[in-house]
Length: 406
Ligand SMILES: Nc1ncnc2c1ncn2[C@@H]1O[C@H](COP(=O)(O)OP(=O)(O)OP(=O)(O)O)[C@@H](O)[C@H]1O
Image (cartoon, rainbow, N blue to C red; front, side, top):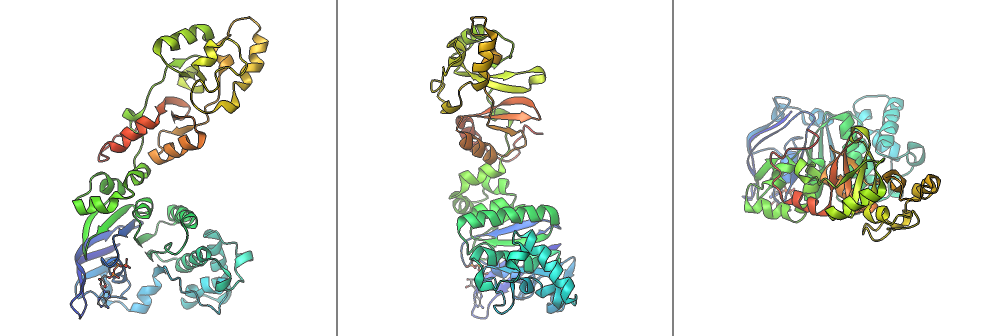
């Protein structure tokens, strides 16, 4: 879709902004350009919409050299979002978002309808925000209007230059999420400039790490983070690297631990002995077809009673929710023993599908504070991830990693 062929930009003062760039952005692909200030990211991007002309080499859009195309017509086909959004201050938010469809000759009404749809799409209720002036919006809201405006003409290509740069991390996170959601539905071809490795990893199908005026490495986030091509790249992506990797690394079979397995109908006292012999503090309880029914702390089984036994001693920190159902059923069983494993069952709160990333698994583990997270294939239990296993997973090279989800 976008293709750079040996594109070089030298300024009259002798500065080489970019040198001999050759790469392609596929249709529907997001390529994130990341690198330190002044390394040529913006120059790369603006060569596409002819705000910058290469001194040698060329840039093709859909196979046609942009140099031969009328810049005004060219730019109407390309959405352009910049950090300083540049909303027109004397036009309402709705009219700002309707600018490009108007330029493209659509009627005022049609343009406004389209603009309202897009404001909605970027999370701004047009009934609430449409009639405000730009100065009545927060920075994050203004950036959303900028994105809506860029999308209003339905451009197949989007150039986004630090579009979420001027907002605080919380809003930024939300805008990134919305961008991913939008992109999943709209599949635009996007060049995205950012300083932030985390953002590049999150949003890019591929990321291009820039050194001075050239791309040091272009690859999927997993490739770049897992196997940096040079010490420079390693250093640059190093800061956020560990966490960045979590979001691009899937759960592999070797990450999973298999805790002892009990069946719900097993005798609790006997199960307790078995866990004691194995030195296990807890076990998962599986039903037919290995469906995960719950878990039990060893202490609850050996405690015999169903009261509040075992809380804290299993070390999982979730002592607030004791064996709730257990107390009821246990009373009903009334056979004087510890009953069956089922009587001590606790629900598993922390579970993720096998297709989850390590970041999702980690987030789930932290949220539930259970010290483990169950990994499921549909209803079927595959194993658990523990903090130790996560750490191991982070250290393994990503390239070619086999995933449990297949
Ligand atoms: N008109 C110009 N004349 C001379 N040098 C220029 C001109 N425009 C840009 N440059 C230089 O070209 C290099 C690349 O600039 P560019 O804006 O592409 O960098 P960038 O990676 O986008 O930086 P930032 O992240 O700070 O926006 C810089 O060294 C810049 O100073």
